[in-house]
Image (cartoon, rainbow, N blue to C red; front, top):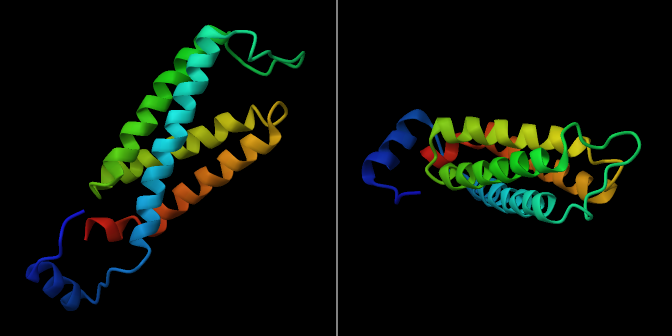
Length: 143
């Protein structure tokens, strides 16, 4: 984020725009994407190197084998972390990718509800907060 210049202030006054405290909520969304992404990286590494930790149930918790799931989760977690950093720039493409990343992560967490209900519910709730912050208040960061 940048410091407000006289031109920024004049533009905000001219168009009735005002920077609110919700900018901090967007920063929170970026930080949450970084944290959730780092959890996914760790989860992916566990799936790759510690196969006994993640044991699918009879219903087939995972669609892929653990190695494939580990790589997918590892790469997706890195993507989430990069998008979280990009959100601090305030660009539209970063906000769009942030909403996509949080949405995909929430959908992926639905598959783990039976195995880890509390953890999955917390992550889904954080993903919903990220989506809300980026869609409703994301524009304020770029101003």
